[in-house]
Length: 232
Image (cartoon, rainbow, N blue to C red; front, side):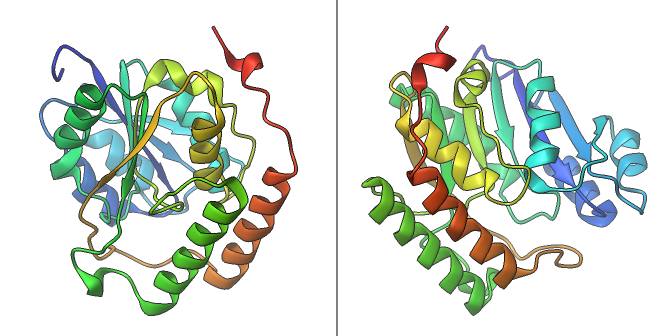
């Protein structure tokens, strides 16, 4: 419980047995619930998470978005926080981000990694890819955003059903932000956080995933977003 709100943290994982232990142990005591989505891992990710008190949701379909679509509706907390299982996002800033959500009166906060507090935490090609995709988001949707690809979000759990993200892959991250920006009843903001070097092996194919994200942005721009369908 933090500031009279129950807090759930959702972490999608594929073969992150080393990183997930670090992430769960670093969460503040105010976190009420940890939901780890085991995305068909072949290592001990689920076992390690369960042993540290997390509720493990198994999702057989591979994909970042598929994992989140299994985990995000399963939360019980009033506020949802998302993080990766590789230790890159700052668990130590969760309460700070919730403060910003509450004090700014918004519904959805995306944690912006830029400008990087530690330039060595992200390699050059990833910096270039993130910059291209963030500028593409700005141009296509006419909304200033500093980090369209951030994987850490803090939002009032009730708004998730309004956003209705569809992607099963990496584009899920940009899609949920864009849907929050476009929805007439959802107030969106960003908040700067630290970004740490990852623990464990990199799983992404950066050029393939980057191109898919760019093409998905174009598709999303051509698809009308009907916010009315998600209203309470």
